[in-house]
Image (cartoon, rainbow, N blue to C red; front, side, top):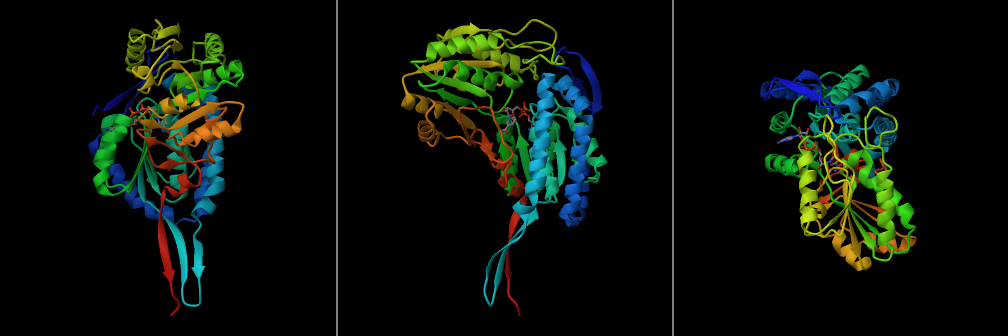
Length: 458
Ligand code: NAD
């Protein structure tokens, strides 16, 4: 482990600052502090924990513009999209504040003359929150907000690519009244995350790649503690023959390219009915040509930088492999030669499942569009994946969409929409997209363990 972590701006390759990183000894000391502090936090009335999160929300509102600027500087996200994330985060906080009581109130489920039965919800204890960088407020907050509300202490490890944002979250939570030892931030990369999962914690909540998730599962599995893994996706959409092809293309170009394609629920594969394929592709390419690539600090920018420099090689390899196997490049296809890490919005047609592009997560502004003969072929291809995060169908016919989506193996399904997350609905994946649930009432109860009470009067 290194002592200092360099924070870089992917849009221009400059170093913003350096921050002191944790090491194995400091991780262990922080875990011990959280363990000691958790019971008193859990003993506080829910109203006090809620009041702290309300003040945290106020802090976010007050600093929203500067928090958005910080996020843009360290991940290269277009500023308008950083503001969108922060505003969306406020909505998620509101959901958790509103739903925590009904999700975790103890419930009497049976009573007769001799016995009463009650279900209670105890906090897990100390939880590890290991986060990705692509939506740090969303993916971090899906864990630490409900975890704190339900009486847990949180050991929070933001991504090394979103450290400054993580440190702002830390500062604002403490300023809002969450005790220093109840929410503790660990700074550093994978080695710090690995040291964290070695600690005696009661739950590990991870958001990141399937490869890291599998590594964590191998370490945590034998310890019989709560483990949730929110991993990647290769999310498919089928465009049926009865759609307005232009409207579908505009919606799906947004779903594929928003956040520069660096979303777990980005549209990553598109299957188009042969009757509307050519019209759809033309409209899709025209829409992509209109997306402004450039300075993430500019309000009009839509495509920003690639956050992790190593991802450029993944994108180049997928494009090269697809073209070698017969795909046609309709737009983009190359890294952009400017300071920082950039990739052109890229569209490939004539693709197939022999290609990496249609099998492996791209996590960038590139998309494959495949022609299909009808619904059954589309369904077979949509399910031909190790992942199972989201999937969508565009058609005028709701019954047709429902018939297809009922047979798709994915945690979230969309009719005529995509790349959408709602705090009111459970967020979960199958297969290599992970295990466990965040958001919704399930994603609050995930931070508790049910306790069965059998109460007999003497
Ligand atoms: P990553 O797996 O590289 O890193 C995620 C986190 O794990 C980081 O904080 C990292 O420091 C830490 N880490 C790395 N090695 C570790 C180890 N051995 N032990 C413990 N922690 C370790 O992923 P990333 O690049 O930050 O995020 C991108 C991935 O996240 C994509 O695959 C994306 O689809 C996925 N993602 C999923 C969701 C979801 O809700 N399903 C949401 C956002 C992102």
